[in-house]
Image (cartoon, rainbow over the protein chains, first blue to last red):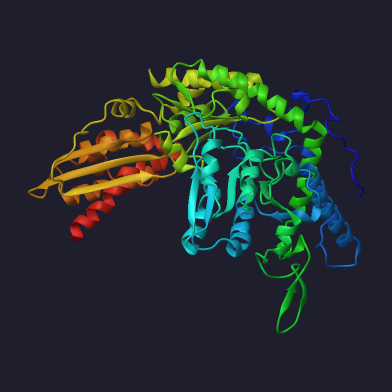
Length: 419
Length: 153
């Protein structure tokens, strides 16, 4: 299997052609055309990715890093090629810095259980933003309890924009780790990671970036951000569920203790002791998720062919249009930055008279899938004095007419509940 | 692209007129002074939360107060609960809670139970929308637990 000759943006960004690649977009929901606007929760999969899974199981299936037989060699090559593709996709200096995990949550937990376990002590502090997903709050809360460390929050204004001046004093000489979302899954805010990284490095701390919502939607360059760790999930970027990535700077990963013990992560085992394999295998104990890793490579190919700049521009255009349309409704308030240029394609909104769950059910009747609830960010949602919100989130296959369907669907729901 | 109101008519079983009426005008929303039973229920997944208070005199519920917020189904269900428990004994309330649980799960209820539940039978429409059963059950489950604690006390 040789590396593909894909170049960024080698395919014209044609939404109709893109939609034709996604079999699920042809199905009906409650008798209506599916309008899938829950991409921040999970994206749909193009046939290229699905085919990669089928091809793997029909042609290549075998264990990796084990045998000398043809299938094992092919499986290993495909698995490692996918790692190389992911490394290139986020501009990682070395592909050994890409660790396969199950998802972003596991990537975050890995850093908490290894790097932070070894480096955070009593009286130290960990700094996160006040707009994190539960998976980037709870591991640090637990670690802080255990170590007697302090968990600090970076504040944001009413528009959901981080207060960088405030960050300068929150991040101090006792800060060991700053962990921040690149893009909020609720507010859509794009956070100033490079600026936070500069402040973090000034005090000698490391910065971890939760890029679950950014890597699928915009060009992300770990070197330009000057991140130390960065993690994301496959399933939000066209790849299967059950596969995620932790990227980390080589020197940091190299010094970290292992996360799990078992096969593949060892170099040598005696009855008395063991020593650890090189990166990235030190962090990949047991038979890994081979098929889904390879399919993640196919997803990266798909996005690369479209060009991440084009993906981003498409979503920016859609978001600006959606903001304008949704805000034209009398009873709707949008959380987060009101300026579409400060946000990604995630629009959380509150309807003054219709509860998000009633709205969610009514939109589902019309074939429109949105997310409703606390979006795994309870403290953040509560800070807006609401208990739940509705959220529409976009991806490469969404169209302006789908935004129109959403807005029309909300109007129809208003009509239904005022009957 | 979408079917508009036609598609929404399929929700009529979920949002029966009586449900929408209780949602818009919930009954018994005043706070009860010195309640004998006082508890909160919440569904963290949708953020619905209710504070329910009961006063029991001569082995019967004399006052009930429910405050809180939630979706149409959970609000209407709580309001219907408040209407039902007034004047009932602890064992009558317990039987009603059991009947509502079975109704929402699609199990049999007797004619006598249907008679006691009255309007509450409208909540049964939720069965076609399984993800919303929790909304309808929220206050009833809380009441069942609170009654058990109260009796044990």
